[in-house]
Image (cartoon, rainbow, N blue to C red; front, side, top):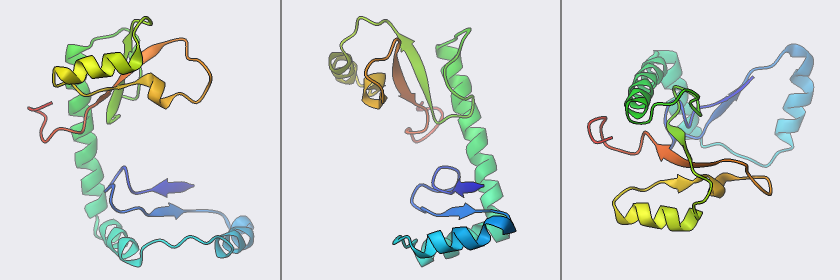
Length: 146
């Protein structure tokens, strides 16, 4: 298992942990030794202290509560029988009509104080049958502002 801490605890602390069985130990340690990547020792110490003290669990619990609350607000405005995205996500995909020009739509909405990203920014294939707006649920200072 591999787990990072940047989304669940703090985006500035870029640390990942890996758990593996004894059968893989030798190969994984050899691979890590041959990779030229160094994680900040301070970041590792901070994250380790958060995990060992139980504070990490409290942070995750609070972030999960905030994400759930933000998603409830989103669902109150954009109800859907077929919601796109995880109910604890920090952003949601709002389905839109396919006739929009992505750049023009983003520009028009930003002129009205609404900053969103069109799904075209995130495509990895040649075409996409449906279009969406990516609506951030965690970029405001409070749930009231959202």
